[in-house]
Amino acid sequence: MKLTKKQINIFQTDGFLVIRNLLPMNQVDEINVGYQKAINGQIDAHDWKKRINSVPIAQLGDPSAVLGWRKFPYFQKILSIAKQLNGNDLEVAYDQLIYKPPYSPIEVLWHQDAGYGPWPNEAIERGITCWLALVDVTPEQGSMQFIPSSHQQGIYHHHNAQDRNPIGGALEVRLEDQVAIPVSYHAGDCSFHHACTLHYTGPNQTNKERRSFSTHFWPTATIQR
Image 1 (cartoon, rainbow, N blue to C red):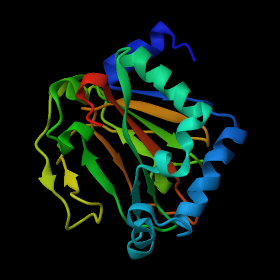
Image 2 (cartoon, rainbow, N blue to C red):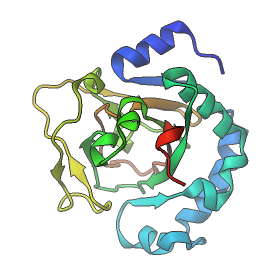
Image 3 (cartoon, helix red, strand yellow):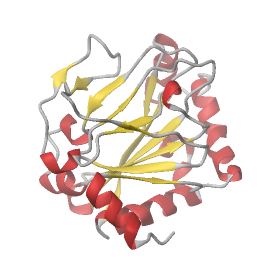
Image 4 (cartoon, one colour):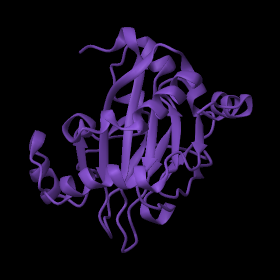
């Protein structure tokens, strides 16, 4: 997928870019096969089964390697986009899925991905995350919200938020007067955001699942294998 100059400018200015219809439904369905097995507790890699059953939100690390997603066309699409946005040396650093079942009360609080450091400087300056919706997702279900241009302000102070969020090492940036932009997604839509862009997802207040998959890209030289 070739980005337009306008799309690249939006990302550079706002720190995030929404891309509609990145994947056709047959490719979304292909990913959802493994996703369903994971959230059903059929796969126990990295204690996934325990994480799924213990709290009303689940963060499962490294799903692409466990479920074989790296061979899907999706990965080449998002890698191409990430390189167009922030440099040809970007590669996949890690990925994760964060699943919110119906009526999950858990927020993923305001934070920057680079706030979970220490990250290498190049990863802070040019790191990117792709957030893929695997079902239709609204703000009421816990879709992504962003603070435009916050990536230009450096790393904010992050507070320990483990008392409010069961995700390991949860952090929070306390905001004052910033205006958030909520995004609604159809299945197959995605957004890309800079490592320093403030973002948040609210509780799932609906009777529908919220399924998402995040892939994080860093410059190659900063990735330790």
